[in-house]
Length: 311
Image 1 (cartoon, rainbow, N blue to C red):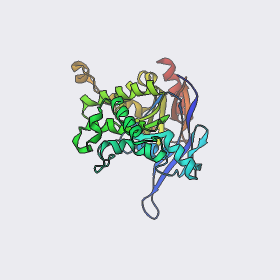
Image 2: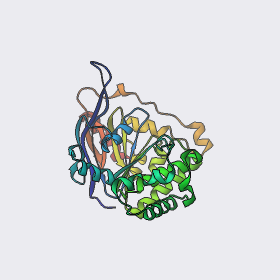
Image 3: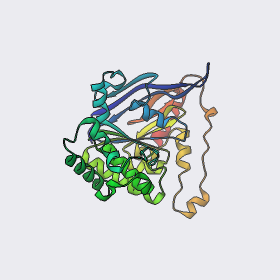
Image 4: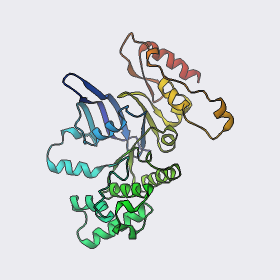
């Protein structure tokens, strides 16, 4: 895997005013990189700011503060239509709800070809139709599906249509915002395997947002754990599972069920208590092991470092 940075997020903040004097800090100072060709998993419970992060990166929201550099250029500095159009072609999004994200009045052919039309990528009607048919086959559907409407498909098939739509403009980076959470468990693995296959074939880079840590580990190279708008831990997927340092990460991992009756019978769920943290100073993101980062104070850093070495 290349270590060339494709996306650099620096002190990203997304705050929403909810009244005259109240502000919700949905994203509060995120800093991390996504390397070309990798899948970066972003996990955390509902309401922690994962989806808001993805939407801010792709500029569905303008950032309150901070930078999102894509191929070395801050995307929030892009102002003219030509630059924004090119950016929208290079970065695409797969949404959580495969039905709400598809226009129910449009046929599948027109949904998938919307990007082709906007960017002028199909010179003739025949080329447009062929590209749509090829994309449908790529995601495991067939060309006869092009003339149907979204309501005629299952949830898994709709998500495949959403993936085909994202692939239509040949992006290099795709944000997958909880793409399997609305699907049956039996379908989830099919969609994730499809994403992995497409990544290999098309040299794609993913930001994979989810709350299911077990599925995130399966698809991700590195994982960042979010809690109330902040990254609390970041590490290689295997390292994070073997050596979780932050109490919140341990809590998430302890909630993962395993197909082992004896283990499940004795499994102890770790509850996360934020009040147990050292409050003598503002926590910072520190490297406690090789490429293993934890949000902590100086006192906590010493503890985590010893714990990491002992493990």
